[in-house]
Structures are given as C-alpha cells and as structure tokens.
Image 1: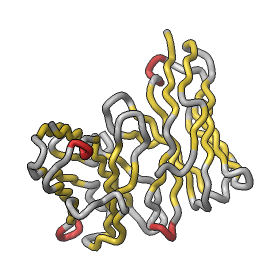
Image 2: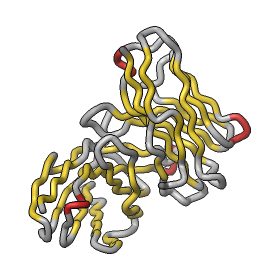
Image 3: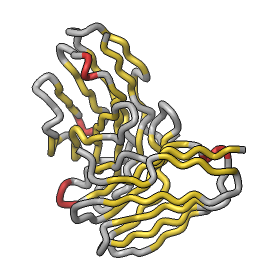
Length: 112
Length: 114
C-alpha cells in the first residue's frame, strides 16, 4: 500500500515557470527522498531530506519537510522541457531497514 | 546510469512459466532492495537484503516469489508459475547502509505475462 498522497496528480506548465508538488505521509520517518522517473525508465534520485531537517536545496530543486504536518514539498524553479517526468516522494524508516514507501507520484509536463 | 544494472530489461512470458531476473548493485553497497511498480502507480516494496541475509519480505511476495543474494553481491528474483497479475516493472535498488540511506535504482525489468 502507498504511504501517502501526492498533490497534484498531474501538472502542466510552460517552460520557465516554477513547478510545486506536495507529498503527505502517515507514519514516522527518518528520511524522505524525492525521485524522478521518465516514462518506462528507472528512478533517478533527486534529493534526500532527513527528519531533523526543514529545507534542502540542490541546483534548481528546493525541498521542504514539515514533520508536524507529515508533509513535504518539491519546488522546481525555472522549469525546462527536460523536466517532464513523474516525480515520486518516498519515506524511509531506519527501524524498518529503510525500505522506501512511495506515494502515487505527480506527472509533470513542461511545455516548450 | 546509477551504477545498478538489471537483466533482462524486458521479458515476455506465457502464463505458468517461470522467470528469473538479475540485479547487480553498486559494488560496495551492502543493502539491496526489490520493488514492483504497476502502470501509473508508485513502486511497492517486495524484499530487501543486508549482505546475503534476506531481512524482510512484503506480504506482496507470495510463495511463488523467491529472492536470493548469494555472497552478498548480485541478487536474483524468481517468479514461478507466472500469472497475468505479475505483469509489472520490477525495480532493484542498492544503498551503502549504515546510515547512508540514499537508494540508487536500476533501470528495471519490465515483465509482461500473456
């Protein structure tokens, strides 16, 4: 079963705009990871944020984590057509071997 | 390329046949995970290994599924007596473990059961 929900399920934006997607989860976590998946391909790791962190940046990506609300957001700034993909959040818990529990994903279309 | 490889990339089989997939993790990674992903859904955990020990199996892993990781290196996932419901992408991931939590995924094996 999925850990939580991602919102929105789909997002269509113009190149150059920012894309924001949200992830909610249900149980305690040690870390939350964001992945990108191009159609029919494997998952590419984007960023990991630990439960004691509130915000992290990597290039054009910004991730926030609010453990009190059990939610995270991923912001992609100045989007490019190459950012078109599905984005998944996944939570990990050390006591459970850090197996990842994924959300349903947000499908992002960046139009040139 | 994450450094995790999977073979084959695609497998088409008839219902009732057995199939085996292989995953080669990043060489120094001692944790190896298997996930299954159906169309339009996020991946779901199947099982994981710490070195050669299989430490957890999901309830999704019926008796027809078996996974091994001999010598703590590559891993195989076998599905016996395949059913149409087994059609999915099977993903392998590895991590260093010991607090290094990032999991690196392979390209996946897409299984189609006719």
